[in-house]
Length: 336
Picture 1 (cartoon, rainbow, N blue to C red):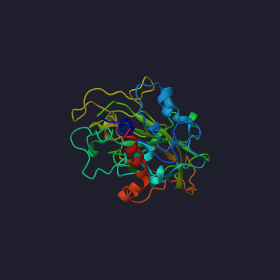
Picture 2 (cartoon, rainbow, N blue to C red; picture 1 turned 135 degrees about the vertical axis):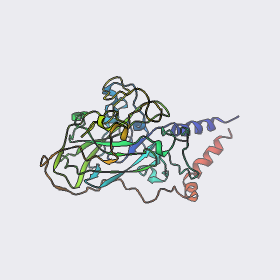
Picture 3 (cartoon, rainbow, N blue to C red; picture 1 turned 90 degrees about the vertical axis):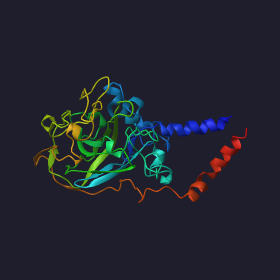
Picture 4 (cartoon, rainbow, N blue to C red; picture 1 turned 30 degrees about the vertical axis):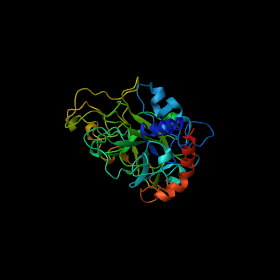
């Protein structure tokens, strides 16, 4: 009969297996979790999906208080104008470079490498990534608001500026930035969004960041954002210009409703890809006329996440050195 200690370990590991995803960077809200004064290296508070909630609760993940925990002073998600930036898509902070010195990170967001391959024709169950394979991953996006106070952000001033098709998939995700203008002195507010396409509850994800544009910035302000529309194979029906993030399947505040089946015969699901008219990469149609913003040069502040080269985990020897005491303690406990 399995011991009590065995059940405790299984339950702990299953918490990771059933987790969802977030974009991790030290410029994010809720990096340390939602316990005041406690830096939680194992937090997954921000990864919980948003479904059937009021707008007051789903907006910037308010329902569990994540919007009340901003990044540390001076920490920003830096957006190089006409460049790119990298975040870590993971089920828990523990599996990123922002926790435990990065020793538990892997190629994928649950700390694993899946050297035998991952994905096929059935929904993936090894980690809750809401897809059958990489080609069917729905895509993710970042949006920016030129407000420095989270309370001043609205769906209309929060504009999608980049997308990344076929994500979430691997842990490291690199997004491209268009010719964004500079942020106010106190920075901008950004958000990451994801709407899974099947393989589970039809929910959505939204999380906040304090961000700023760096480098040689643009001279055109962003236009107000409009709701995206379903336009698969009918580009004339796409929303053109600046678009909002996708808000759907909530009690209120939704900006899109879809019915019927898509071209593959699956139930329609809005996504950050061509079905809603989102091009992959930087969104270059989001600006007003040239001269509506001041061109300037903003030096990077050194707040980009330090992600070491390579995605391999620690060698087994180092993993044993780090975790052998825990394993021995567990073995001893299981005897009783």
